Image (spheres, helix red, strand yellow):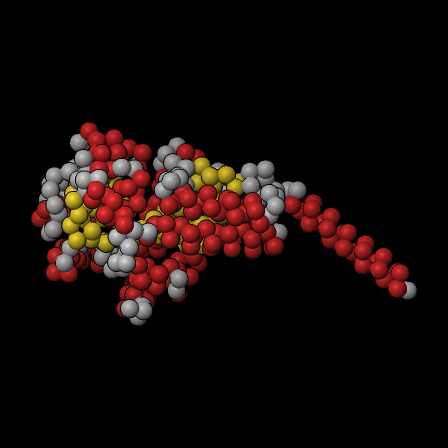
Length: 342
């Protein structure tokens, strides 16, 4: 009887093993992961870390390959989310800005001057607001897995220091492909021009545009100061969280065990990306800012009074887009920020 039980157990185990193997044999040889920025930008580093962790934790059974520079959508980063829904892209580490035309709730992070600091950003992404936003993404047939970060977007230009809204008047500013950014810079008196990241640096270099807004890590790696962007104003007007995500059909083809591995790898890689995005730009660590100053950047840190002038100048835009994002969600976000640890 004991021998029969052992043989039976072995037989069951063999069947289960064969079942899992057969399931996994349906996996693709390569899963295409889209990003806008590659290494050595923190965005690309986080995506590469995800691929590295997944490969290690699945013994090479799941192979993620990162395709930077939005090359899977011919450089049009605003089409990334739709391409992932359609299965053209398997997975992505995407910007909340670039996905906002398809998921209106993601415009939350681009409401001007909503988030004053990193603690505010964490209160949103790691709290009930982040959960609500993931639900909105899931309704679109995409599986969100974890958060990362591109950083607070600071404004630079080649003309003069910016300390008040009047300093932006008439400046030609490159902005990302979202109507909210166009509205914000128009309200501040600038002439915004939407263009892809691939076109941005050439336009800055030739003087076709006077300025741009991006995290300091992007300024650093892309050496934006070589394009004449000498003046940098730290105004923390919006931030750009990133989301690790998968096409729903791709996700459902993974075994539950592999889903857990891929998701946890995204969470871990996201934390790594956040650490890189913030390095050298915090109150306790100004090393990146000092390095950029050594390369010729001239920094302006706004006082509370100066920053409030920009807040006041964009209140109408904030109100207009609060309605579009969803009043309940924005109210929840404002409360989460007000209650954040100080």
